[in-house]
Image 1 (tube, one colour):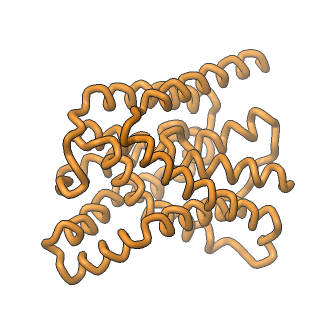
Image 2 (cartoon, rainbow, N blue to C red):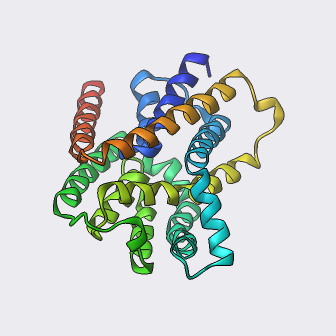
Length: 261
């Protein structure tokens, strides 16, 4: 992989992992659009490491508070939240393990990705419009974590978007926009960690080159900025912008597919 491709895919991963637009869809579509070779397992590790660094750095103080409270004050708000996040991570982890082969083959069809992008865009818009948007992070309970966790299992399909489906589920339980996003980002930590560890075991030192390093750095910086500015935007803006983007991208995929056929 050349340097330009590494930078572009790092940028795509950093934005797509945290914005509700699906990083997996973009990592399928960009090589397909530009006829680039498959970036491969090694670069997948780099991208996961980059976004893991981004979310851990941004939520560093929250993570410390959650872990300490979870084991010393499990009945406090932060203590309960740690275990809610653990419960919410189980469905996504199981779907990743059980459907890993399909995720790398069947689910990567451009037309399926386009369908998932558009459909999830409509769901995101509907959830944003119909949700009560009154509940804060301290109002989240076990039922919420189970429902949002179950929704995360669908993110194995490129185009659904882990952040998009979990934010939609959060909105449908009555969470505020920023609360749904924050809960989604905290949920991403165990999922991204697990994905990185699963692929890291097959990595050797000779696989680490300039493209790998650039992928980590770009994904980390862009991911951090995506988290920061999305949370700021959601204090006053809606998810409609992302719905229009998803539908436009899905339409472009269909047009390109038909043209090439």
